[in-house]
Length: 138
Ligand SMILES: Cc1cc2nc3c(=O)[nH]c(=O)nc-3n(C[C@H](O)[C@H](O)[C@H](O)COP(=O)(O)OP(=O)(O)OC[C@H]3O[C@@H](n4cnc5c(N)ncnc54)[C@H](O)[C@@H]3O)c2cc1C
Image 1 (spheres, rainbow, N blue to C red):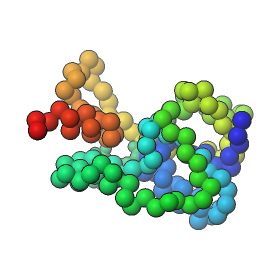
Image 2: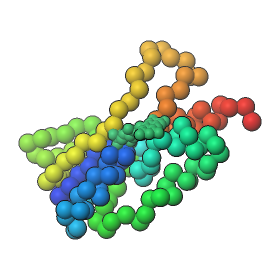
Image 3: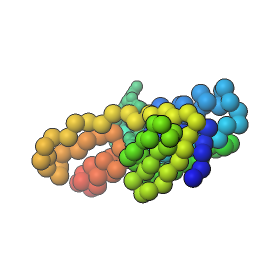
């Protein structure tokens, strides 16, 4: 099991900003970012703005530089368990990592209406954006 000096859970806007914060204090410590979505961090505002003016989906990552060295990503599986005494996290695909310092940057989620129909959309993720875009008449 790999131990990282820094583990960030949540590859969102706060998680991405935290990388820069850590690097300003520690230029070399290895950082692991664990994200539920299968994407590198992306800004959310364009989901309700630029992308509706026909910006390309790829433009979400245009301002993402190569990033500092020593940053690793484990994407596509949520963290489902944290063992605080053992400093260990576990994802739903069974991966486990130990950490020295842990940041939870999980954001928020819209409350889902019980039994809501397929045409109800919950903005905030690329997945929902694409689902809504594909449902629009061409
Ligand atoms: C459509 C839209 C438009 C917006 N427009 C604006 C704007 O114009 N101006 C503005 O100031 N703000 C805007 N916001 C708000 C802004 O985007 C949020 O405040 C910001 O994204 C919050 O950052 P965050 O990192 O806390 O959460 P997020 O960016 O949501 O990131 C959290 C990440 O954590 C992941 N995660 C959650 N649980 C787990 C887990 N158990 N394991 C692993 N990963 C997990 C999520 O999948 C997500 O990727 C907008 C938001 C949306 C949705």
